[in-house]
Length: 155
Image (tube, rainbow, N blue to C red; front, side, top):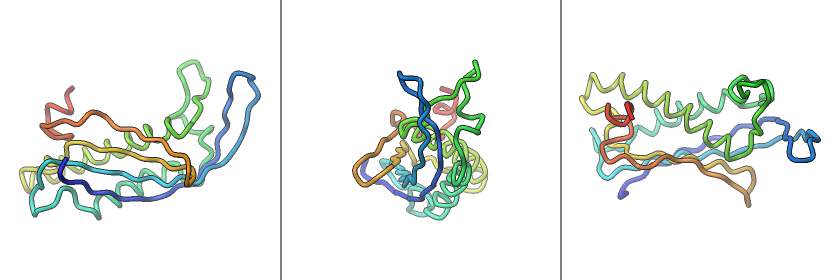
């Protein structure tokens, strides 16, 4: 895509992993999160996305997890009551889903005023860095019709 906009924030959390040996391992993480928005063209006002809006919404998502024990959050419970390992991959996906939901609501609120909303955004990538040498990403396939178009939401 010819255009991209990135915003960053961070969160600190604790969590417990359980692997094949069945022995729980509790640790903590300071994760730096980068949300990248892509598009082939600029939207209204010659922007892809309002950086202030992107920063505000990413901060809202960080507050869901910042200084929390992820083991206590229902979001990471399986139907049988067991817990998911909140690996960097799982957390990147969780941030993506939470941010997408907030952006979707924002899109609908501005669509009524400018007729385009976030229509120029065709993809979003979340990169979650747990250190300067280890990271994971989550994204969904780009949607040429727009990440927040009626067709994209319904699919």
